[in-house]
Image (cartoon, rainbow, N blue to C red):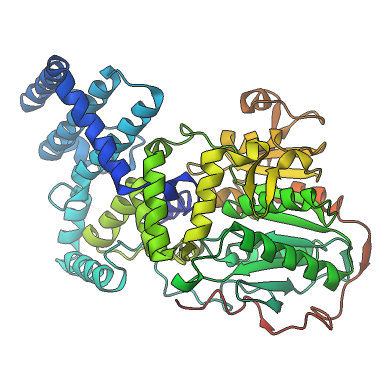
Length: 564
């Protein structure tokens, strides 16, 4: 049970996300390895010095005099055998000696920050793969399971490996999908599709209160995962939380693009968002629509906000951005150091030739950027221990990824390369010059404390980009999607918010010096913020949609189950 919980938590922190990583080409990995080889050859004396130190560690291990021991927090080496069994103790010490030698050598290299991050990233991938726990011969827990099960764990592990090769395109499974069925035990909130186009469906969710607020809310989801992250289960449903608090709730559901639809770019997605907003306004009779978006959906919503401001439209009310980076830096995450101009151009060319980046390729590439959490954990659990992967709703959603159109990928890379959101009217995107300083909407921005994908200090930079006078920043416990799905039912929930009202400091570190920790979920705090900006209350509508936008099918719609 403890192993299952650990797998759930670690993988849920590492869900797929759009960003500069979609521009990493295999040549970038080769270049990073070449950097290590170049440094090895450039100073043989330095290399020999560190090899000698590692050799000394090896001698101490062989003579039983080594005091090398794994970090007590390293979950790979929790089994008592690593401490008390001489064979396994020596095995982990050899591994730690290599790890120590590699890291000592890397620290001695004359590299700039970007090169150092690149070298560390590649070295960590190599070291993670060398861990003795990744093999049956080097994993005492797996050996005990083999004996206790009379060999059945090995048979089940081989079956799991065979099923992954045949049915999962060679990738180790991260989730047991069998218990989940859309519309039955996941994505169950009542609603209707009130608009369906080639690119998207607009879902209108049924109110659960007698009165609703006048100004509705539209959610713009990411383009590489499906919209039901907003409605996973009743206790973890942002949709249910909104309707239960009187918010008229609408969510876009993007279609999974095929090769022929690879021409869909940011302009097309923003136009669809505008179309959805106009439909929401017509259905509710509101002159404004509040918008909420996360991850790449937040980048799309920001381009949308900029375009509406450029066209002097008053349609957008408030804007909520969750775990979204608008001002990226190459050093935000070590994997970002792999991105190069040449690599991004190669990635663009390959994507344009293929029409789309396949969902499986995105998932595979992302997994190898965090192999310990997303690959080796499951190799051990599924193959060596012969256990099923966890049945966890967030991981089910994460595995249900979608293709990414080549044109949209190119536009996301342009936003990254040009730092378009930090400029004022310099970068063309979606038929206008991007300028967030013209966006005056009240802003609510969310980051996650342990977010490895969109680090919270990177999300904080967004607070300085808009022309808004009212900006709230909240730092949620946990990481990435778990930071969002942190409902009031979570007993461990907590968040951080600025003590004093007023303008936010220029830097994340300054902000951190003036925050208070609040026990509980950030959802009630956000809901009060939204409700205060949603107008007066009125009687809840008796029907969903209207005469122009008639219901054409129940939530969660057709596009979330469409196979491509």
